[in-house]
Image (tube, rainbow over all chains, first blue to last red; front, top):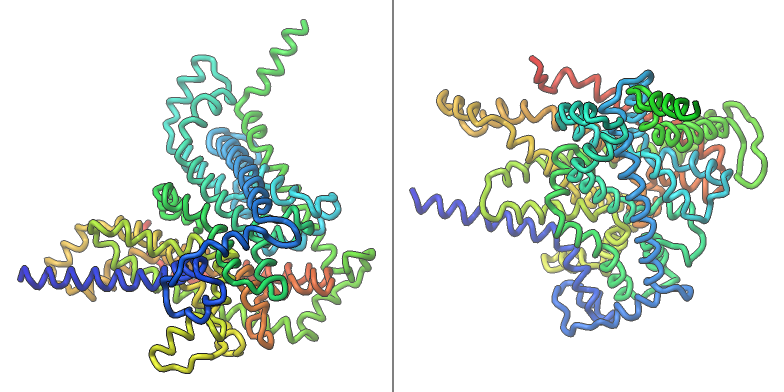
Length: 281
Length: 303
């Protein structure tokens, strides 16, 4: 009886491990290929471990293209992602506070609008927004990639934070009000600091989404010195601009590195974000 | 005098309704400026002949009429998109549910397993994975190398065949089942163990327990996942745009990619705007249909 249970346990772990290996095989293959001699990547595609580890691909890839190095692309991506994330987290938190704690005329309509903004995806808005930003003179600048996010237009985050604030006891607000705190003071001194976990969760998702965002960069950025990593990588991999697959895989590996680091060190928040609210990974 | 006036303004600003409006002001401005206004502009342009460069010319319903009567690519892209979404989303949910059922048994390694299984869904949307996929399924790519070990022909062009190209995208989508899996995991953990204990007393077997307890209690979660993933499935863009560009012979021409091509490659921007509006209506329709079926199969916790 006991032996059978141990057997079952072993089979369970073996199956789960094998399937898990299949799951991450493509990624491991990419990372390993980036350390192979670029000419041998496809002749030795079936073999995972490189015969000789080389960093040449990273050195060659880092040079980038059209005279712009990947250092610039990474700097651009970091700038866009950080600014847009800070903007979205702050604006969403204050909007969430208004919706969760204050009664006012038109609040219902706003909640519906927020849910609508959750449902309205970027792909549907791609052309409308392009035409509008073109009128505003925002094409080929970072404005379309940053400014909208500073106005809490990602309903997901507002919704997440609203739920969180509703879980904070109202007695705290009342006590602060008696002590002479204004509605804004209550937000700044009490609610906002207590929101830290949900702010981190939102920040992580926002950063990952901005980092991976390809569509808006493709639409709005024409100048190679302004490319974020996602767009640069796509153009780098286009036939004609490079057939150096080693360099391509090296830069692809670097481009997912920030996400991987977040994944490794802040996993708790990601798991919580996905399982409590259905935020997409 | 001045001071009291200042005081009264401050007082007015500190009422509950004023605070509510001021706090939500960023969203009010953002929603109008970045959603309503652009939607309005594009609605207007969808009734125009417009190519970005010259002034729009009103042409009434021409764009919409052309779409439905004189554009085989429009129908093709709708068929491709439906095929992709209707195959990849259920597959992804089934995988997510199976793996969640397996991983819900907690062991020392389960946190690690969980991480391995949902890593793909964290990075799957990136450009890096898209170009990796393209190389993996190339004629000289790793997929063929591995298949040749099992005796299959080693130089099949997965991306060059009208039957298989779409499947590379479906596999990529199914591969990212991790986030649905996490949602299922947390739903599974919320099912009260007393229910299973009671079923044990009644002598139910595993199969019975799954179909009578687990599955019905999961239906709200499945429904939520289904709606969100269907919408996302219909809007898939980046992976198709990078991996196949709609090729070969439009067999992977996603609706979003077609809209992009019309608007920004052929500069039929008015037509593209009309396509975007139809897409919005389609998504609304699908959501409505899904909600209409809800009462037939989703377990209502209220009753």
